[in-house]
Length: 242
Ligand SMILES: O=C(O)CCC(=O)C(=O)O
Ligand SMILES: [Fe+2]
Image (cartoon, rainbow, N blue to C red; front, top):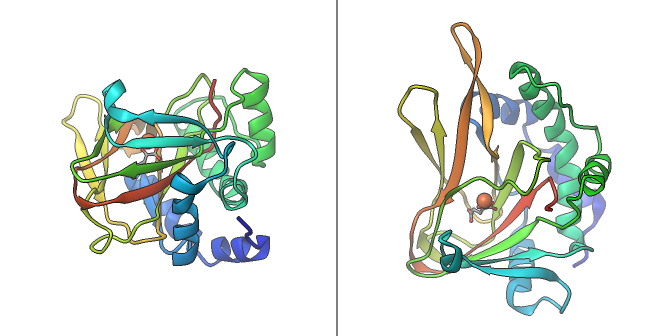
């Protein structure tokens, strides 16, 4: 799929990154409205059924693993151009936030400025397989709360792009995040997305400012039951898989 790199760069530049950073710090999730245009959503979603052989490295039927109901496919390298570009362009916006979070949590690990450098680290450590994916849900399907960990190397933020149009293509099927706080009850947030919007959120944990410094909360995400129609999403995970 052709995508003009200048279009993609402009698309990211127009977003309120200061606002995104504040939302991520306060809530652990931020929305980038209209990250993809409608035609791009359709073209990317169409790969699910029409992708050439070699587009995907594997297909997972969620019910077989107790992950929920629905299915997904992991892209293989080389990634479709738009997926590769979004991963490359989003990463340098997110790495400084990830580094600040690690510092707040007292972790020494830092993430390099470019995604190519970070992937080289994953690949050298035995995590060479592509993790971006397309997910497809039909009526009654859902995605259980989970964390996308694929090995020792974990980049702490990820993105999900809604490729279908809510209300027209499907009803229900909301992205849900839970936050498990130490010695407290869990908090939940539902993230309203329109077609082409991306949610950026914490993969497994994030720092929260308390009265005596930062503490660590554990995050999970999932999707509530699809009540009608078909919902397709694209997931961008920045670490690769073992
Ligand atoms: O379909 C969704 O909204 C969530 C997808 C997901 O779990 C992921 O991309 O990691
Ligand atoms: Fe996920």
